[in-house]
Image 1 (tube, helix red, strand yellow):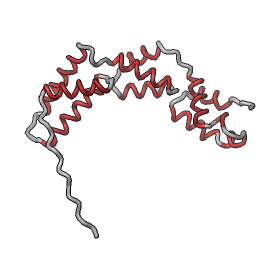
Image 2: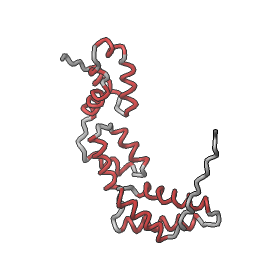
Image 3: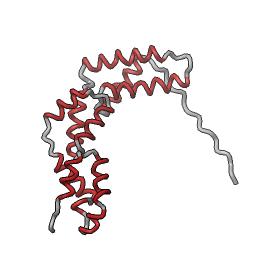
Image 4: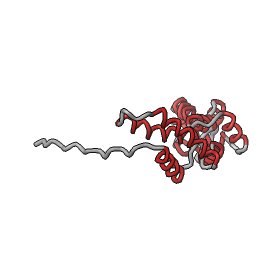
Amino acid sequence: MNLPTPEKKRKPLKKITKTRLQNIGLYYLQRFESSVQNLRSVLRRRVDRYAFENKEFDKLEAYGWIEDLLEDFAKENYVSDERYGALKVRDYIESNKPVRYIKNKLKTKGIDAKTIDALLENEDIDEEQMALNFAKKKKIGPFREDENTAVQNRQKDMATLLRAGFEYDVVCNVLSLNFDT
């Protein structure tokens, strides 16, 4: 007995104004640290969703408002790429993420390469230790239960470490280690 399910009626979206965009941006920044590019994409998604439902709405004017708001937020130091990048770099290093992974993640969030390099210079990064911690967590390479499976799965382990973002020479060093326990 299949009864038709009633379609849920969505509430109409509130009108997008410059003040409303400012409030959306401030509320977002209260909850999350963000880069300028990330906040821009969050606000643009809201504008795009509203413009999709209201065809007469001028998206280009709203995009101009977003740029003005981002300038104001940057002047007031509400949003800062350097602060956001430093926070994320620390988090990623504590999570044993490799340098290549960190660079790619920060680039996708809109942080420029010079800023990323400056942030990574300030950090003490031991990529080999990070790779060892990763291998230990995944129980691969020298951390496999028996040596026979470690030899048989060397290519798989190498692929796992390389996909995680570790450099080839670091991966080779980690997989060549032999722990006698």
